Image (cartoon, rainbow, N blue to C red; front, side, top):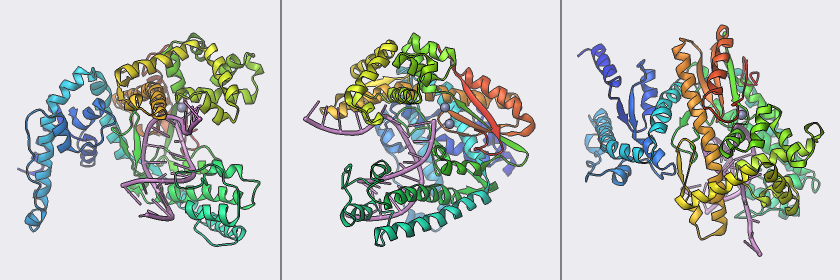
Length: 525
DNA sequence: GTTATCACG
DNA sequence: ACGTACGTGATAACC
Ligand SMILES: [Zn+2]
Ligand SMILES: [Zn+2]
């Protein structure tokens, strides 16, 4: 057979009507794309099936899964002795392992499919997760372009800055030590300089930013330490870290994991493109290094307050729904209701507090946690929470029933049926139990937002191809998509993206989308 | 490998 | 009486 014939036959196999099965297919699809194959028709990814059945699965190693989910007695052949085949068998070993993997996956298909059906996870699997494999593989394959000169410049600047701050700190501390070592830093601060320690950690006294912030007035070195931490973080994680993974075409290609989080979200590693700085001006500049290729532009679309909208929809709270329908700033509307003033009379502080309450809600907070965050007393926090739930009573009902149902079943379920076991709910330890309650409240909210976002990704990718557009999704960050578009296609891509994201799921509140474009990720914000 | 810290949604 | 906001990943230090 000629190479061309082999390629054609393999293509036919990949497109077979009944679909292909594999374990962790995204990686294979990515390789196929590099070899110019079209994305395959997928029947099942056993790894994703297992994830849907239990998103907390400890390991996706096939032998253990076959033991756990397989039905027939099935033993995997002896692992190939490397020494034995070492001389001529490199490719043979790889073939053997691939064959074993295929065999394991095929053994798992039936029992997994049955379990997926039994737990009503068919739609989630077939309509969302399986199509998403291709979308993510294409994003990983494309990667996002970076401005190498800009990135190098940022790294160099930060390097110099770290060095300068290091000298000042050693001067002020009166000794040389490794500032990166929390252990050495503790000795310097709390023993040698005699400063008063604040919070404790497992092993000693905390030196984190929150603690240092409170010690600012105690010694001049503290401010420099805070600055050092900020700059060193940017230098090491983003300066050096990103430069080290720039690949072909001056593009960075991350891996997006579909079977990692307990809630249904995606994660990103090598590198993590989900935590590129944005909250501080100094960190934000790294987004200037993420760019579109020549004559193209980046389009950034972000769901507005998707998790709060999920709460509104799930709880059916008329007050919260109205607030979103009015289309005003949600934190201001909330503050007006909670503090009993007109929206125009809401102070900055009141808005900030309402915002904290709303975020706390997503995380299942209690009065105690809110008090810590707002730096107020337990009583005052409880009273704020009381007026919040007074204004939005159905939200309280929803939270309570969510926990109740989770306790009865031992797991939570999102609106799309995504399950998460929460064994913490039956822990003998009260602290662990309330952790479980917070996780239960959060899972339905974060999980629904993730499901909606995944639908948007699948639909958007499909629509771009259907319309024969050249624009492509190059990145996603939980509720935000970044497209790379030919400049002349920008306005069309903008229309399509807003339409697809806004209609991903029909809720009792609108799904608002913020969108903008530019040459860099920073500019498109 | 575990711990502390800190970047994001 | 107690004391944690939920979900991730990278880095450096240290055992
Ligand atoms: Zn958003
Ligand atoms: Zn965003």
